[in-house]
Image 1 (cartoon, rainbow, N blue to C red):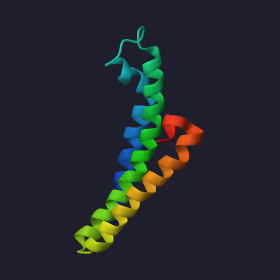
Image 2 (cartoon, one colour):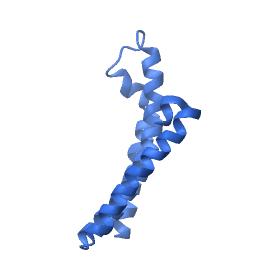
Image 3 (spheres, rainbow, N blue to C red):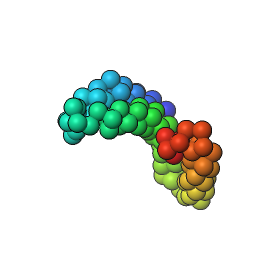
Image 4 (cartoon, rainbow, N blue to C red):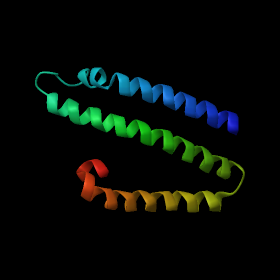
Length: 103
């Protein structure tokens, strides 16, 4: 499990770094840079936040799937529900100071 987790984190970091480094170019593939400069700025900020969040989510999913694979489905289900509740609570708390970015 630890080898899988380490390789998963390494791959996530490499992909996240690539996305963060080239986020404007990636968004430029879908948006016109001259007409959608504000959308690209918002998208760049979003990609930066999401890249970090996906690394955390990958680790959580790995542990949940290990528990599920070991036959401990109840613990996995409870952890999934707690994760959802935690996301809702953090979104509610962070929406005031950070606006829509907090969600």
